[in-house]
Length: 452
Ligand code: GLN
Image 1 (cartoon, rainbow, N blue to C red):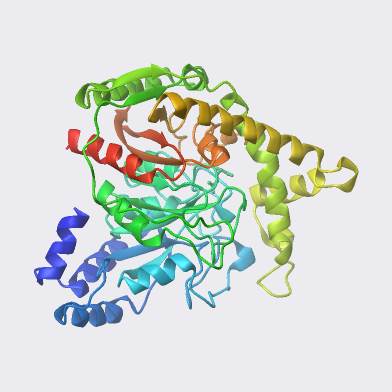
Image 2: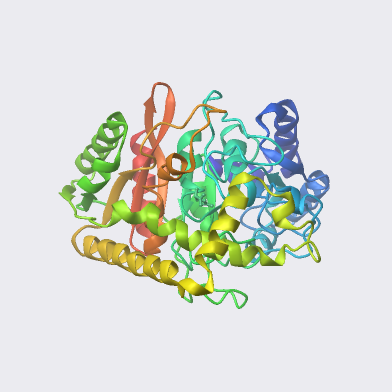
């Protein structure tokens, strides 16, 4: 759809202005979805400028497309609130690396999307601006923390959205809202300008209704930046140049099966793996990921400590309010927990131990990828909760059991639609080795083509 739309815009069949107008109308008419915290007042004017460039044959690769941005990614002159009272009145003073690249390619930032406060969540309910509604299934949560990004795509309020994924925040809402989402390999995309949740894991990535849109966006935002030392100096491949893939070895893991609480989800995913194998002349191989059951327990101490450290700048002097006085329950839990774990008397014991297990999980995946090309898994172990349902932190954290391993291992992972259970969208998660996004996109595209 994105490929066709770009053709229409280029040929003049659809103007950039008209494209933006259509989305602004959708946003206005569907306010109750609460996907946006802020809508760009200059979007139409900017579209007119792009239309002129198109006429002169000088427009970039995202010309006229509407891009929604998660509210933890700095965009100049837009409110970068992280959906928190702490930064309620904070406006971006510079463009993040990813935003610079989008603007260079003539994408139009349509607005700042709703999210879980400081990206610390998995339901989309912890925003100080109120919960995001799931357009694909209004009685269930949209997933988080990139809830507004996913909802904006699913409800037809933008072409492509940016989210951030620390432990699943792109893939989880993509799954719940029935769209496509990609977490790039750690270091593939510059994090410069992203307000971090946990600097060892954060990656910015795309959400879209189709694989082409995600591949195109990643092609544009990926690459080395002088402003982010962990961004990797490796050429960015042509992700939109999809290649035929067959005779693969597809890995599935009984370790995920054990952890999957709703067995209907695992059965659906297994059926998808079999279908993919059949259509690509591939073989399914069982792989051993013996440490993945420790993923959640390993991830949280690291996130708590890094989040505590990252939030010390929110002391009420330079940016907004003092975080401890203005944030919600989950954010405060992480700050207090992170402070406790970092106490000098523990000599970094918990943090260091967690880093060691992180290595074991990475090795698990390295070994598995010696045997198979890709790995298939569910996105969540159970159906998304009903909107407003109260669950305890352990239950909430367990929702990320299948997405966190990719962040711990630094590999790339994408979500496409698997089907529905009880009328709730369910995503299919595909893992590929670090920096093999091309393979990931080829498989995702193949799956999409099989199911259109
Ligand atoms: N739900 C996970 C957490 O709360 C992941 C968040 C994310 O990926 N930003 O930490």
